[in-house]
Image 1 (spheres, helix red, strand yellow):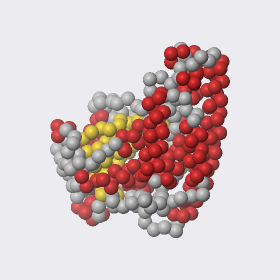
Image 2: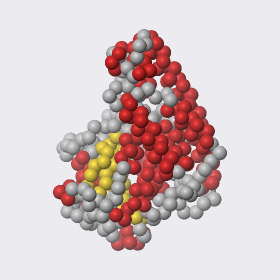
Image 3: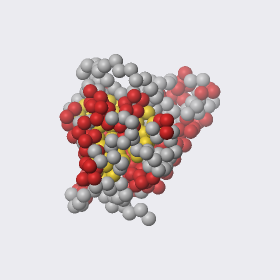
Image 4: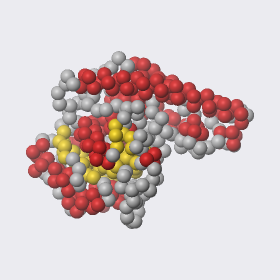
Length: 387
């Protein structure tokens, strides 16, 4: 039975939905000048590059355990009082099951707002002995992803592994410095002792990428705290799921995946499921590519104008007015549920913060990422808020 004790990370409100299209162009038209977008259009972009060689089973388990904490931390950040859009990408590298011609690298998910998709793909990762090329995977993420060119956006790469940072065909110093020129900062997480990570040049990678160097025990069990608010929060999750109306070609599969990712979170730990529920309780958790409530709210569709063939089962045979009222009722219901989850989430985090003061070192993958995210946020003018 998994031990449930403490969590080191901030819990905020998340939401990631609507997968961004993959981009493979390597053209660089130059930076966008500050102020070309409003504060409400700010972005936080994070690429996670995970070593999936044989020795990294613990790392992948930590990533599964900390995904919601990491995103919750990101979504507590505001720029000029407004929540930025959060995009996360996922890569695996160092796995013999990948193509040698691709330097044993695979882009699992491009920069995306679809957190359920990221969770799904993360839980599908499997380790297999291989050659870990840090410079190559950083280079690949630089070329593949649709990085923002706005100077005020936060753009961070986190690479985790345990082999010498200098392995492979790409010079890590050069690619890290190239990233910095584009305001993308490289943070390195060595899975092993601090001194060995320095010897293996993981610290130097962070220095050249103007990021942070961390070392973690990848095999350490993630610690959680159980709070008096957990049971009610998870009760609300069941009600929240009932407000989603799948539509279009993606509707049914995406709704099923939402439940599947609930189950994945629960398998990790009961407290991890609570963190996911708090995340889903945020208005930032948008699914307008498959959920009719979000799609109507964001102006993607007008339910009264949809063809009968496009309607989900619960709306077939209803008049345009009846459809509208049904969706509006579900929207109001969701807002009330999310409001209660948000309030309980704040109380839960306050409880965790008090418990954390009594504990010792809880460094792990999530804690390393949270520490650096908050530091970069301060430098970029982003401020943490639980409101």
